[in-house]
Length: 278
Image (tube, rainbow, N blue to C red; front, side, top):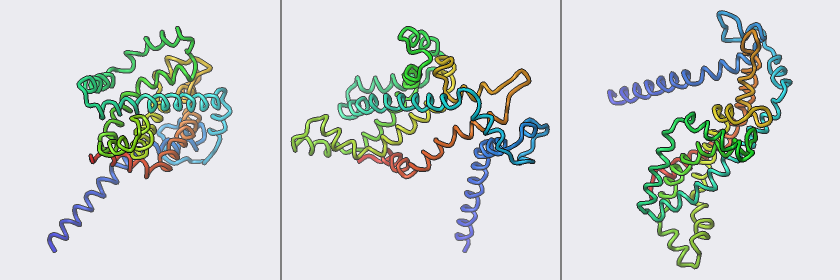
């Protein structure tokens, strides 16, 4: 009975800790959503109230009617897709070569990718501005997508390496014996096995671009602005427009939340794939 009581106490303590952690991380987003339904006067009231006194869609109307909002959503989506495509298209062959050939050069390359993750993004901001301007890609989703790939590609290579290492080498060797070339074995045999891991990597790359602010601020002006920049521009000479800002932030969060919920099982499967080697 004592052991049962101890186990029950442990479970209760774990659940209580989980509830506290979820509340701490979830409250800012909940408060963001609630603020988006407040009237403009309630949104800036001091002291602030958690629940709206009057529920209103005025902030959403003002946010959607602001100039450049729809175009910024299109720019954000285009930029994220370009960055994700580059990260997966370059990360898959790089990770495959590193894990399958296991050479010293591959290990050095892996270390170099880790070093690039340690470099502050602001340190490469100015060089990227110069390069995109010279190539005529300044203030375009293409130029911004290339810049975002410099952030997501190193992480993509590291994630994909763990997934490829979980695939037994005998699987590829059997395909080679059956007459498959190395590229065909990669595409027809290995890729279906690591598809969950590739999906996880693609989601992380997409989110890294979708939420990025610094490069979007440096590399865009008007035509290529993404939604995070438009959200930051909701201000007047009297201060920030908290109502429209929170409303647009909520709308901008919807695609990410839906994507995560829709691919939840694949994300879990992909993460567990790289945890156990065959």
